[in-house]
Length: 228
Image (cartoon, rainbow, N blue to C red; front, side):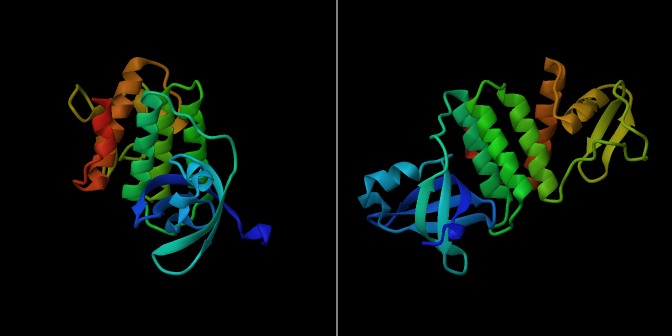
């Protein structure tokens, strides 16, 4: 077979399809998120072992329309092991992709951002910064990125200031506290992907949850229930 027919992919989700096949959701570098059928894969234990959630693969896909055929899958690296809370975080990242991205909307930046997030969760990195960086990058890919450089009046974000973050118009400078108020320090931390203290990390988490909930438009994230 032509080696150039293979493309890099990560497994986002699998479910049984018939007696011996799997319906697989992949994030690929060249085609974006795709759904494909791995026919007869449950009969071959070695192949089934490769097609696991978070697996990094080289795949060959064929077909047209919404659901493609997975002709070949080869391991592209060592199996990913996400222990404990990291597993819940990885499932959350996967569910965000499944709920918010369109099929066959390719983005090398999104693919690389996902690879970085999974590697971070599998390593010794704290999970919260990994998730915030991925969420910010995902929203940028979707054209829904947060305004983290300046406020709604065009003034640069002041690290010492307080802002009411409006999802439609961006941050507005305010005085006092409230459920939608965040510090400028937090907005700049989200811009830079660096979270220096617990208060900033907490505010960033709450803001991103509010923004993502807005874009989910009422659709629940089952993976969040795992954190309770």
